[in-house]
Every structure is written in C-alpha cells, then in structure tokens.
Image (cartoon, rainbow, N blue to C red; front, side, top):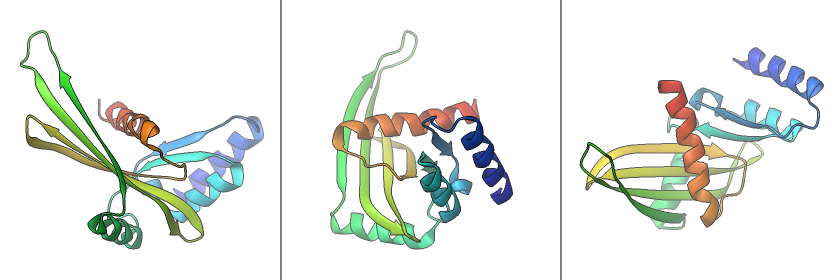
Length: 152
C-alpha cells in the first residue's frame, strides 16, 4: 500500500497540479504516511478510523469524550417508505479536533446510529479538515457514501 499511494500521488499531482483532492479511504489509509502525502500535496482526507488503526489516537479520543470535552450534534429524522414501516432514526455525532499524531493535526469523528431505539451502527472517521456544527452532517454523509459504494 505504501508504494502504491506514493506512486498514485506523484502521478495525480504531476497530471493535475491544481486539482483540489480529498482522499476517501478505509482504515488501512489512516496512517502518518498518508497524512504527510496529503499535507505535501495540499490535499484533504476523510478516512475510516478504527480503534486498532492508531491505538494511541483512539485512546486519546476516548479519554476526551469520556471527560465530555468533545463537540457534538444530534440529528433526528423520520424515514418514510412506501411499503415499509416508518423508522425513527437518531444520528449522534461526536468529534474531537486538534488531536496530534506524528506532527499532524487531525480530527476524529464518530457517528452512532439508533433506529427505533435500537443501536444500528457505530462509525468513526479521521480527517485533517476542521469540523464545525453545520458541516458535521455533511462529513458523516460523505463518509457513509464511500462505505455504501464499497459494499453495494
């Protein structure tokens, strides 16, 4: 993976030097090398993040959330289907900005989904972009779309 991402980055930057790029990827790409490549090329990234990806960062995130020092937003929606029962969905988003990993400033974001009062999913992402309240939902939807494309 390391050699592949380096080669791809070189070709992309050479062929499209001013193109704004945001790398979307799974947890294999959540590492300092990818962060550095994005920084050098002035690109953004939104990567799936699992606790095992960068254990020290995951622990720091959990500690800060445990202290209640995170930012968050709750979005409730009612999904209406033609031939299915309506679903009440709660999207609980939490994020912690200004985390540092090997010289890179990152934000870790988490989404917990409840459907009709039952847990339906827990997802985390890592990004080099700043997240503010209004944009949080857009980040979540973008991260989920990447996952849906991969799994459909």
